[in-house]
Length: 402
Image (cartoon, rainbow, N blue to C red; front, top):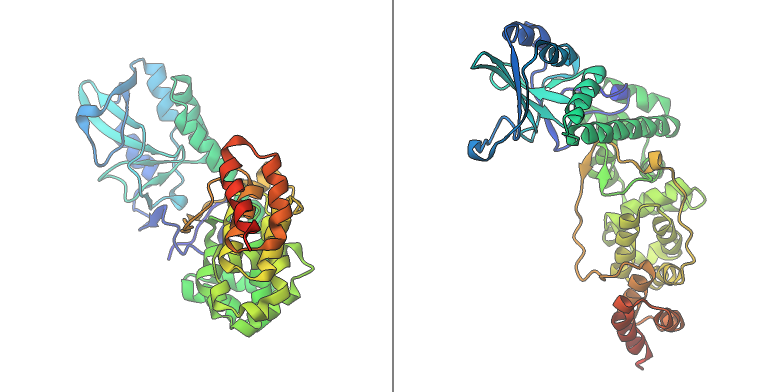
C-alpha cells in the first residue's frame, strides 16, 4: 500500500483509501518530466480545450483559447514541473481543461489538468503526475489570466485542505502517544496501522484516545481523514460497550473528548449498540458537545440523532437547543477547513425542514410528546418567521394535547 506523501503527513496517516484517488505503480525508468519534454520539443502551438482525456464527447468540446507565439509556448513548457515521488496515483475524474501541444497541425501530446494539482498523459505516463507546488500555481495563474479561473480556485481549495491536514497532524501529535505514532509511521498496511493502536492502548483508555482524536475535528463530521476513517471503521468497533461507556465518563470534562463521543454515538448513530439506560445521564453532556460544534450541518445531524434516540436525557439536550442555550464553539476558518478525506452521507428520515435549529428541535420534541418543551414552543411560535409558523403551530397543538 502506497503511503500518502502530503506535507509530511506520511508519519501520521496511512493511505487506507479515500475514494478520490487510487494508488498504482508510482515509478518508471524514465523521469516523467524528461519523457514529456522529449515528446514536445517541437511544439509550436498550444490549444486549451474543454473536457478531459477520458469519456470524451468530442462534439461538445470547445477550444477555450490558443497560444501560437514562441514566448507563450515556452512559458507553458517552462511552467510544467513534475514531482515523480508524489506521482503514480489515478484521480477518478477525467480532468478539466485539457492542454494540447501541436507541432504544425500534428497533435503530439494531450495533458488533462486535474484539480489544479496534477496532469494526466494517457498511455504515456503510468498514472497521473503530481505537479510541483511552483508548477501547479504557475499553470493555474496562467489559465486564470486567460479567463479560466476554476483550476486556480481548485488549487486554492487544495491548499486550504492541505493546511487543514497539517493542523490535524499537529493536533494528533499532541493527542496520540509517541510510541503509537512511531509504529503508525512505519505501518504499510491497514492491519499494521490497526496494530499500532491495539497493541499499545486497550479498553476504555483506547476508546478515550479515539474520542479525543475524533473530537478535535472542528470541520464537518461528514468529512473523515484517513486516520479518522481507521478509528471509525476499524478501531472503535473493537471496543466493548462497557469500556465505551467508561470512556464517555472519562471525557466528560474534556471538550475535545466529549465531542468525539458525540461524533461516534450520535453523528454515527452508534447509540443503538449501547445501553441507553446505562448511558443515562451521560446523554445530555454528549448531546451538548455535539450541539456546540461550529459546523451547522453537523449540529443538524446531532439534533436529528437526539430525536431518534428519544430518551428523557436526549430531550434535555434538545430543549436546551430549542431555547438557544447551547453555545457554539468558536473556530477559525483554518480550523473549519476540511482536510483531504472521505465524505459520508448519512440518511436522515423524516428530517425537519427548517433553517432554524431551534424550530427543528421543538418539532422533534413535539414528536416525542415532551410536554416540558411547550413553553419554549409557544415562545418560538410568537416570533417565528412565516416559513416556520405552520410547523411550530402544529408542534404547539401536539404538545397541548392531553
